[in-house]
Length: 492
Ligand code: BGC
Image 1: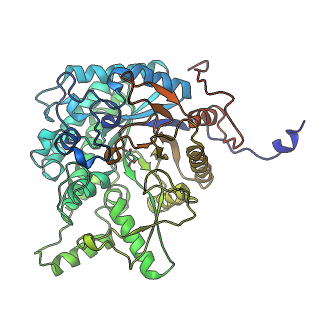
Image 2 (image 1 turned 120 degrees about the horizontal axis):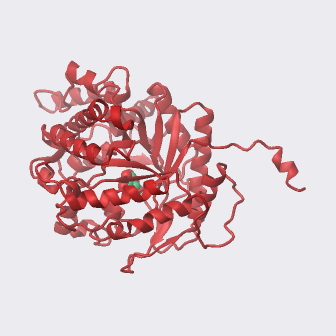
Image 3 (image 1 turned 30 degrees about the vertical axis):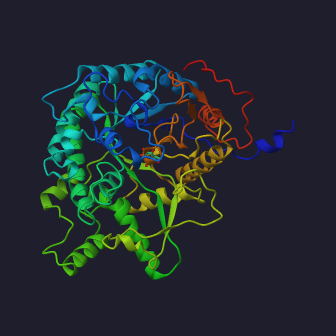
């Protein structure tokens, strides 16, 4: 009786065919770093040779040990009632030397088993080919700064499409180009820690975009006709807004957007093709002032532009937070940096365990509507979105629940606004190796006991809330799990 008053309020529903999932990445969950004939990756290399760069001196040698626990992972997907699961392949597990002269049967077997287990229970695999773990042998040759990189990447992609494409219909070529190129080949932060400020990221950007387009065309020409899947790229699109309404701040925020994601999105998704205009102009002008004979940013030939333009079936968006940009406050030590400015946050935004991650209002909605307008309403999947808590925060993660509910309300707002959004992957299925933070920051819906050799996984409160949203296709802000015992519902 008491409910009848409430039921007059229209409940907003997620479409039945909207894909709800979770995401992970190979180096962060697999372990088995040298199992069978797996080759070394740049993250194995960095953490083994320079362990003090990781906050708790840890590494991904074993991490959640998915290499041995993959069946439990799929069981968790079934417990949650997931429609889809996004994970990445370790290139050097499949091609130990990075090149196709040697393939690993053990690597094929591991991924075949993982995929088969998902498919058996009706879970759609969404596969990322590259989530930061380049084979070290290719890095020895310059990695993504080598102009041959697009060729090596296409060769790898073909092996993968051939091997797994009968069951995998959603392909993502790269995860987060900015974090690969800017952090890895420019600022010297991410592996391979190349410090080539103002040069490395642009070389890498062009090679990455060309590699993506080569893999995309290989797929569309030679595999999609028989396999019938789609291929896109995942770019980190945090919302970047001006700190004040001044023209200078607005311009700097636009430049920051161009540097953070436009550099990779524009050549593929814009009408014009090529690198973003204002950023290209700024880099060209600064390069001359700095005494270079030409711009530090390479150009695309007309032929290359045409090859890359439109080369994606969807835009994968990783979204976490909002940054506010000011024209006057810049990192002084980044004098060469053409776009990175100090990121501001408002004090009232709730803080996570990660210093860069805050809960800003309408963050997801602002990013998605911007992409809709800018790139002619592309098909979008949110391929990551999530919240960190401290390693000792326990299972009652109400702040993560608040974050997910806010983000998913924004997903509904975006659908209402006509954004062509087809799915949402929560980061992450379980706690894992959080790069430089090691195991000190946790993003999982399931807690993993890293002290336990069995790497036991236990659902957090957020897992029950996410499960309920997926099942009911609505966000019930009042819902509280009646117990912390997880079961698999019928049909999963
Ligand atoms: C990356 C993940 C990472 C997450 C949280 C994303 O940028 O793709 O690998 O764990 O952010 O930091």
